[in-house]
Length: 155
Image (cartoon, rainbow, N blue to C red):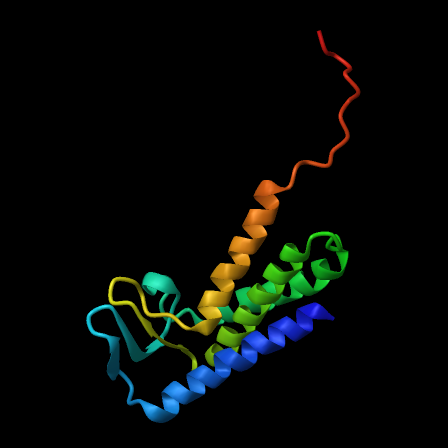
C-alpha cells in the first residue's frame, strides 16, 4: 500500500534527522549554514508553530491519532485517478506520526530548520504542510462531479 510506504519513508527521514541533531548538538545550539539566513538550531517545541497551544502534549497526541485513523479509513476510498490526493495523504500521515513519536517519547517535538524569520521546524512539519497543500490543490481544482439537473428550472 502506497500510504504505508510513503508514510514510512517520511517517518524514517524525520526521525533520523532528529536523532542526528540530538546526538551532535547541545540543546539551544545554533550552527549557521548561511549566516543570518539559514541555521541549524536545536530546540524542543512544546506546542505548534508560533508557540500555539504550548504544553498541550496530549491534545496534539489525540489530534495526530485521530488524523491517522481518519486517513487510514478514507485512503482506500480515494479515487485511483487522483494520485496527488493519495500522495498528500501519505505526506500528511507520515509527518503527523513523526511528530507524534517525539511527543510520546519526550513530550516535545525536536525542531532544527531555522530561517531566522520564521518559527523553527523539522522534516515532519515540511511533510505536513506539503501534504495539506497537495490535498488543498486537488480539492480546489477538481470540478464538482454532481450531476446537473438537466436544465430543469432554466428560463
